[in-house]
Structures are given as C-alpha cells and as structure tokens.
Image 1 (spheres, one colour):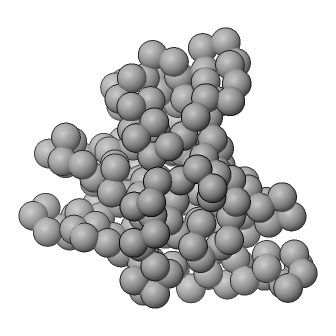
Image 2 (tube, helix red, strand yellow):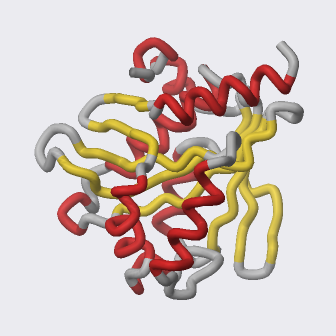
Length: 196
C-alpha cells in the first residue's frame, strides 16, 4: 500500500471519530465541544509548566489551533475517558507527526486534568492503549517523545514502557521506543480489541 493511500486511511479514521477502548478507559478523538475543557486543563499552572510552550493560551489561539488540527491527517489527539467510577473525561493524550514513510510517530500532550482522576493509573492505561494501537494497527516501528528532565513522574512512566533516552536537548530528554524493544505486555492488546 503506498503512502498516499495510507494517509488517506488516516484521514478517514479521523473523520470517523476513532475510539480506542481498554479496561476502565476509552480514548476518543477530541471534538470542538471539548475545547473549553482541554483549554482549562492546559492553562493550569501545574500542567502547563510541563509543556514546551508553557504560555497561557487564549480562546482565540486555541480556536485557531483547532482549525489547523482538524485538517491534519497525521495528528490524533484523544480525550481520555474514565469509564468505571468517574464516567467522564479526565485528560488527553496524542500521537502526532505520524510519518508512514519512516514508520514513526511522536507521542505526547499527555495530561490528566481532572484532580479526582490523578493517581489512578489512567495516564499509564492511556499510554499503553495508544502505543499498542500505533504498533499493532498503524504498523509504526518507532515512537519518540520529548520530556523535561525534571518531570520525574512522566520519566518514570515512559521508562516503565521501555522508552530509552536517545538525546539531550538542554532541559529536555529525547526518548524513544521501538517495536523490537517494547514490553511484551503490548502483545496482549490486539487491534480488534481496542478499536470501536
């Protein structure tokens, strides 16, 4: 299958409103009506200092970003929904800069914005589900990310998944995981189990 057809497939997945589900969690593509919530989370001091652009974002800026995001076929931002106890959206996570020619993608924009949902393993479950989808369904061979060196919670999470440090960019580590180095736990999540 050539890259043009594959990118067309990604566009179709995005238009169809892709959802991924696992135990107690659902990842669904972000919608316009989610923007006030995600903007409020993103502008919180305790969250925004972990983003490379840590400036407060205006509604106008967020809306402009949304218009660009909607037409990108290589950028998937998922709302994290807790489906057992809270039964609501609690955060977001993304797979973006998807490059099918090089079989790689960037992971990030992870945040748990609902205080009641913190410390419940939801970031871990969302990460596992998204990485498994990238490897099992998209055929991605390598996933990379950047993380602040002082973000020990995120660093510990990424290391648990097998991400290794591949570079140093001042205050940031560059990390990656490949299909060959991923933990065996990803083998348990099959494409048909995770996509709705």
